Image (tube, rainbow, N blue to C red):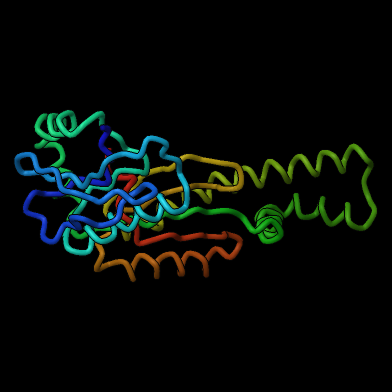
Length: 237
């Protein structure tokens, strides 16, 4: 039977959640697979595993419970090994690497930050930054200018907003990475200027959130969405 893998910890990790409820219906009991100086949190893998809410929460809860007492390298939902023996061989082969990552992640958590623009506020911002563009927009509002000039104005505003998006993406990273240990860029999608994950010392979590709040105050045209603290998914291979 295939083996579902939740995460990897040191074999000396205290209070790993043995017999916790894992994924599946009925939930598969979580067990601990030890290999050398490492231990993997695993269960039997359901045959028809899908990212259903119940199973996503079960995966997260196992990692949350394990992470309360020590560092765990979290696998994303859906990590499956052909069997225990294959997993044990991977742990043995990559023991030094996993131990290095465990050391690097000790006492740290992940905060994900997605940034977008308030459309009206960023429009005011780009016009305020470019007096000529602002004058053209004002002339257009008072009825001046040809149809072609209005099209050109719209194109110039769109270009200015795009340049602002790139600059603000760099700004978010520069300001917030000062309060973090590492930064990992996540996948981009429509609607976000940037999608970044920050590795933050748990004791400095409040400092990181304060940095986010300060950035919001200084750049009110930015909309910042923060999720965390999370297991450091983005900092584990």
